[in-house]
Length: 335
Image: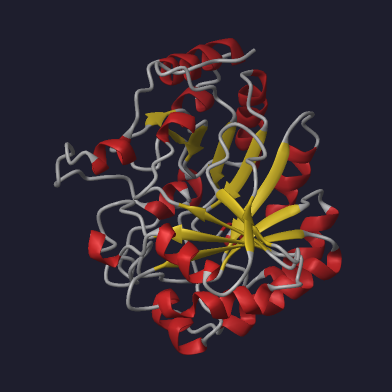
């Protein structure tokens, strides 16, 4: 069964946040000034169990979902996450990936692979320790992330690296990232700094446009543009012509991809969000915990998706959005 929203966009991707906690305090996502020791994180009873996530995922697959992405917060902080991967891996017809900051991969990569995971995306914004710590605002080193990446490759996981670029911080280190990951069989995605939530001090002057980065790379390497792999792929993909590196751009600010967005997000507390920039969600946990039959839950999801009209990034560029919007924060719904 396939379902479509009001703009004829199919439902294809489900992003599942398994925790609102993180061991980083990245300035563009979870600034320490807000997410400190006094912050009221979700407790165990408030978040979905693995059994609940498994049931929800099976329902979504029956509605046309093909791709599952496990996110956070930092998903590897969720105890025994590999057990969830095992459960989800027994569902036919889905591709599972996980997004992580990477520092716990050295300990967990092998177990994750053994549970059926095959693809991960690692957030790494610099291979310079001063800049890395400035952006992550953590006690970890970028070398801790690299050790996790190395372990992941060693056990057989396919790795993609996401780089959020902020003007005046890591924008002068693009070529350093390119050169570091050449010949590594790792794909890089450069991400424009986005106004997710309301606490990351976003402004357009901090955004480094993807075209700027592309020009910087093109001035130093012979590159070619690659075709998209599937409908709904958000990255514009390129390759250095000696086949030493694939890289790409996620350009939500300067090149919105609302028309092709096929994603729905499930927060760790069981709310559904139809856009990364949503103001509010739909309480699916209440439906699950009152033991409604699958058919009624499918109807609930179908109603949400069929009425979806989200076009935030396009409207942002048309300057028709209210500036005081209280958007959902990134740690609740992942990237």
